[in-house]
Amino acid sequence: MFDFLKKQFVDVIEWLEEPGQLAWRVPFADHEIQNGAQLTVREGQIAAFLNEGQLADFFGPGLHTLDTANLPILTNLMNWDKGFKSPFKSDVVFFSMREQAGLKWGTSQPITVRDADLGPVRIRAFGTYSFKLNELQPFVQRVLGTTSGIDAQTLEAQLRSAIVTAIATALGGSGIPFLDLAANQQAMSDRIKAEVDKVFAEWGLSCLTFFVESVSLPEEVQAHLDKGTSMRAIGDLDKYTKFQAAEALEKSAGQDGGMAGMGAGVAAAVAMGQAMSAGLGQSAAPAAPAAPAAPAAPAEDPFAVIEKLHKLLTIGALSQAEFDAKKAELLGRVK
Image 1 (tube, rainbow, N blue to C red):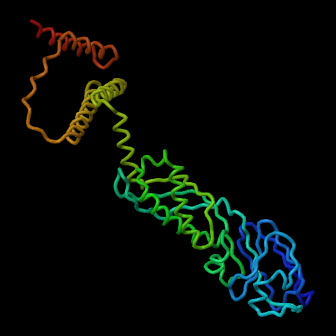
Image 2: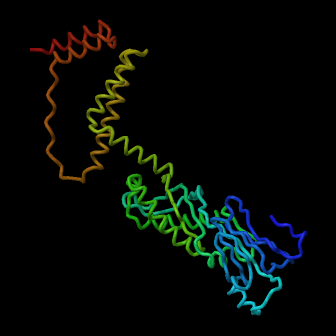
């Protein structure tokens, strides 16, 4: 950008910035700025003259001729005479005021928040954000310092740490249960952005956009939620038991093992349904005084049983001999 070897004094000052650059200190070395030098500031840039680390004069976009008339603060700080015509030395720093977009953030470790439904939970979150330089003085003092320049990549780790802290603050005080976050994702993004913006302002930065793309629980917690969803999907346990028994009956009928295999399948399905019914029944209601024993269920109609056995015979689950023997037994009970 500069050819320091051709001239004794610098008379052209400009910056051709690269994507992601935030600030660049002009490397004058031992060269001095020629009085009357040309300063070119492009759109989206600000050029500032610094005296011992403090901002003095600064220039917006345009072509500027440098002399004591348009450097009033610097002239006063350096006690220049009004008729000063000689070259001078000063730190010149260019700043990019453009939006730095498409940056990603994420929680490297789960953060713990108190959820309205689940209690203390550890969550992970991911998303994108953008920022821009907003105030020069805090940025120079707290970020740039005496360095030759700085870019967005250098700041990313520090910004991500601030974002994780803001997420814990925002989610912890939101009162929105985890299961309702999807329906309130925009509101959650706005809330976190407000917290992030407070921290960024300390460095002279402004958070322009902030998006939460995903929030997740640890795998073991998610597995329990999935089980709960499955149980709610089952609904009527009595119907579920009958369905499982029918499934086992159909599978066993087509496999080797005859009645023994079919019986084991039906028994397993029924036992599972009964265990689920009993377990949920015990956990769903508090203990109550013992009720009188219910009367025994009436014996099933023998003709209805014969009809069911005939269906088993039809699908091949019973042999003709087995069916005939059972039929004779049932008919023998009829008086």
